[in-house]
Length: 283
Image 1 (cartoon, rainbow, N blue to C red):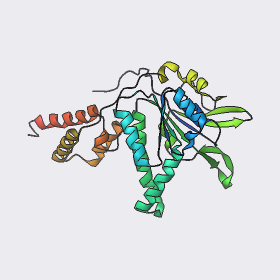
Image 2: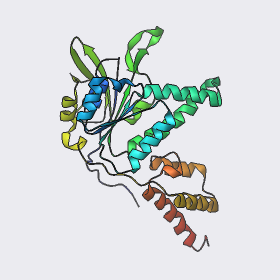
Image 3: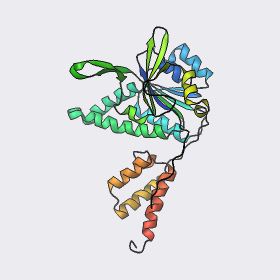
Image 4: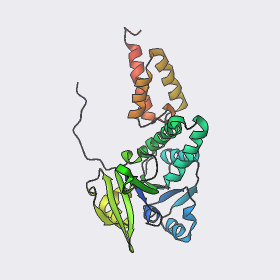
């Protein structure tokens, strides 16, 4: 039986990547979004201008350069009841560079092994961010993008290479004289056309995306319990379920480990295997 359903429009939280040179307005715009929870990785938000905006927006700030602390904070925002509506990680570049250093110490740098190790951890973080019922704005430093014969094509983000694949909106920000301009580098959003240029500010972003959507209340998500994880591991062992199948379950649930699956998703896997147990041929 075919499992396809008729498509219907879904109001999605804004998931965006802002990148550009220092001073172009990435942070200022990001923390003007509703009720921001700012994870500051460069202590850049200590200046008076940012502190005043955060206070006005009923925001909060958490400062870290440690990847594990960042993941712990994101999981808390995902699972706990709170009043914040926007998560800002500013910038993710610092965290990724630190993660690369840790990975190099762990697995070495031969054949780029440290990139593989760091990127596995980044996938875990990004899965959590995509499931987070909040606006998510990641900022990144910029770096030159090179073409043939090392010709400079322009600027790109200086972070995990696949970062842009996971977000609906990627904007390069530039300062031209006194004006700040946003250039849409990638978009899955109808109101932001690719390569479109627009005056970059929170008001313009909110108007184009939809103020009602970015202001929606946040709903926490319950993760798999220890009991559910233990039961599924037991059933997987009984039925000799392959790692490939388990990986598909995780990918569908946007998780990289069983303990980070949503409670409802892991329960469906458990019920599926328990149904198999009832079949006469299995018994």
